[in-house]
Image (cartoon, rainbow over the protein chains, first blue to last red):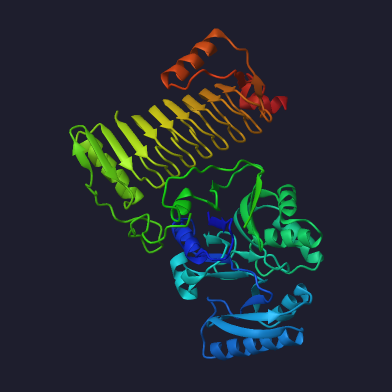
Length: 311
Length: 266
């Protein structure tokens, strides 16, 4: 089943409690996916890049060597960031298997990401001037508590609660997906893509990498590929309705925009609220009402719809 | 506008180990009862307990007219009510609202999510705002009036009754419809009446495309009488100019061959 949600404040000054909002929305849809929860949150953009790296999965066996292995991987990742030309300004332990680094880097992001991910078990969860992806096993309250997301301030974000169907229950297969190697773009998805393998082979042949076996990752990489070739986010989303086969609703975010796309059958739910100063959307209206305290007018977008809002 | 997060909109329910099944089955008994009328606030009640309160009022307390405040778009509210009564939901409902009902007159001052009134047998449901996809799926009787838009596959597998939408409808409206009537005053999405067996769909606006075996029907006096009567009953004003669509009955299932004979022919 899975549940997706998004929220964007049109006066996007980055001062909204976006982490807490998203937790409220996702927790109210816990029944749609108890396996894992993920967030893509956007703070006010800075000049430097924030890279979040996972060094192990939360499901990895905690044997006697675990801590040493993670420390070694982290040293290796930091060394590779520097040798790729990044000026590492600061690092922060997110938990015992994830860390984030603030870097000054002006080179090729794909090269940087590939170089970091060539370290065993390392995966770049997100990379951007304002994007940070957090995902882990458990419901929204659990993940928010572990990562301190109640205190995350920003302008917009998306989230996902996952009921695993076609791939494993672990962080690699949890949403959102960063649109590797395009900075500040992330996707959450509810549905099934039936031409996944066809598109995966096609995109891999163009040099893209996949971190999971989840069909949803195709959308993120597909959009990144289109944008790298000059499409705007909205154009790329329109093309996806033609190219991707299956039943799907997905929400995509970039540094300053949030968009939603529905397949031609409108087979996956989405409820939308557009206010004067904010837009909220989710698989269920309950999620929107978890963050709005008065009666509101909502509706279901129709089939083959692409809508984009900017902050 | 800023958001509200201080108080949860739903009480923290007790769930099973998987976190999916709501275990608390206590009847809240929080209603204010005045003779045959009752009201209660559902803001801090879970789906299961709201429905238990409704059943307690209607089946055990002799109440026939209930108003539910702050339903909060929770799912499956009012499902399976099988008695004649009046229910007013003061706010929006979530998915599978009022499924399988038989008899009630329901008014919803808000929106309803997917699959409203699924398998409704009889009664009247008036929705003041929009309704999601699969509105009136497989309804067998009664009248369902939506004053806003309806989503995709409205009246899928409809077996009777009437669905009226004052706004537009999404794709595959009337998909596999078998009997009954739909009145879509606005536009209809692609695939209208796809694979319908019988029944009638009236559309006031543009039809993006007709589905397989759906054809334009011939308007007659009975159509005029039906439309005017329904609009008059529900105070919907003057009906718009409508087009009528019916089943063309050209699909293989309308030939006179037995399955074994069809195999021989094909």
